Image (tube, rainbow, N blue to C red):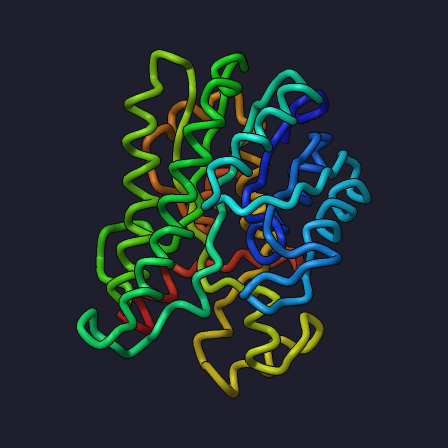
Length: 288
């Protein structure tokens, strides 16, 4: 892996889960990482989780980078505009944008069709997981244009356009995929690379809590969901993004949707415990 010393990144939605894993890995490579989200030491978002952007920023700094926490609701244009004005003032540059804004867990009604799903919750989910990405990309692009090679990464779920079990969830995650494809074409002449990356079954803080396990005894979660055995930590997607961000030939992936398991084969990295989870193979063998 290359080095990101002197590079500036934003992980939008870096409070927990994949965003936190990505931010830490970019920090370990030496980057200055702006960590944004709604949950701070003094404010809890509707997600009702304990993780904060300050905690993530501290972990970035501990890993060797410079973590900077900025409370931002990415559905609010003024807040996003202010964020990028601050980065331009403080850093004068932006090299990497990771769009991992979500917050849709409490808004998703699994098992309900579009006709039965609460409409306001569904529209709010799309505002948080799609519109927020558009607003953030819009204000990031002028700074990314100044970089020798700016990188925009959409974090999604899945690699294709297939239905994902809920109308609004599917629309959001597929929109993230198409955004990367469209941005890659839109921004090709500006030397900005855009792509999407998906984790497999993510062993996030929320999933560990749901199955009442910790990272030390996570295998016990198989009692609640047998497919949990194929899960991966946020460290895994963090490694994937770090490899992409330091790859001098990353432009070969522009417009594509990649997976952690695919990238682990390409770059030969492992999860924190030395394993190489391959959700794609597992899914086709045990679920599809």
